[in-house]
Image 1 (cartoon, helix red, strand yellow):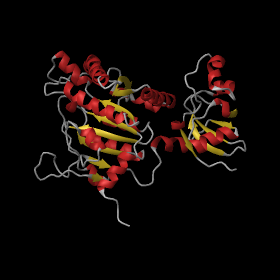
Image 2 (image 1 turned 180 degrees about the horizontal axis):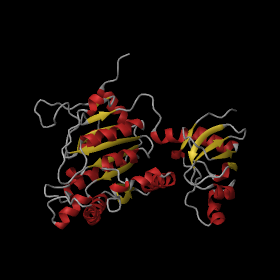
Image 3 (image 1 turned 30 degrees about the vertical axis):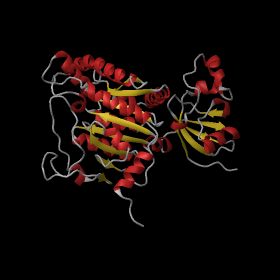
Length: 387
């Protein structure tokens, strides 16, 4: 049987994507003098909205806060001091978000600011909260604009992602069936120095090995931190999650439209053939399951056969002591595990809402942050139930 062509693999990667994370670098959305390129942001916003209009959850991971702050303050050189960098980022972040909000509003959508530090994705309850927030932002017809929280992230305390390439890969790992697209000032991965006339762009990378890593050509400048090395590191993270990634030319005015029309643009990185999505892999193989939920037959059918979220009304028993964001085993009435998932409520609250309709949760607990106990996107089936 013939191997799929690069065109077929690219088409499959796009068609199979339920979520899209687009990362844009500082050098793409700022002008030569460090100020925000409003025209570029307008073009990207229009294309992001067209992607969202297909029903895909769409997230933008955007650099540019430091660059925008430099332009606003009239600085010609990127500050070297930590406090100065944090202040410049805080000043520039307002301009960055105003630009995205204005551009997205023209297309009938809102911009939602999401600032993260590495610690937000290390702690499981915070991980769950970030993921659920991104899901709800999408439900509200808004596009999340994610950035590292440069104004509080401190590299000396190991709470920084280092750059937004790796942050984007981590964010993509939160979302179902995601594809990561990194827009760069370089058209893709080249087999030599990108500016050399004999160098050629590589259309497809099936395996990221030492030979591929050796192709990285970092070119530092006054405004951006990321280079090709960090993009390849992001590709390693994304593909380990079972996700495809594309490095594409951010200064192409129709870059996202071209990608989603299957044009041969940029470099496509493929995940291994056999892989479980990163989040689901973590859930299904978690070393420590801290609790158990037992379901009635109707809830088992809803979860296993219809892909539904788990509601409190379908739970008949809760065992163990667990916190919000923990992994729990989900069992049928014969105590056979059918799934595992990230729990939205601690065991002390689940005990109070077992068997209750979702509309009763507020009255019982005094609050209802989530309608479901385990969201379907935070749940992975481990075994099919027996009849």
